[in-house]
Length: 80
Image 1 (cartoon, rainbow, N blue to C red):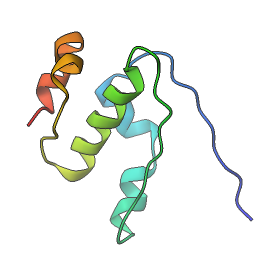
Image 2: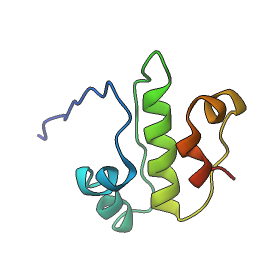
Image 3: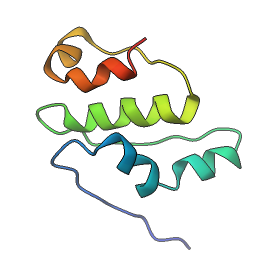
């Protein structure tokens, strides 16, 4: 039986740190599909992290809601 991992994010994780903090990219490379579940922060910070992670893992730009893009300019790098 495997233990669940739980981590609470209260700020935006720098993009370069996302890659080093998660084994998701490695797991995805060994799997047919991968589902990541994120509990959003009330200011949308977890959504920023998950959009950045999705872009990193797929190598593609991702849809970003306009209000989120306005609030977090760093999403310009991943916005498609």
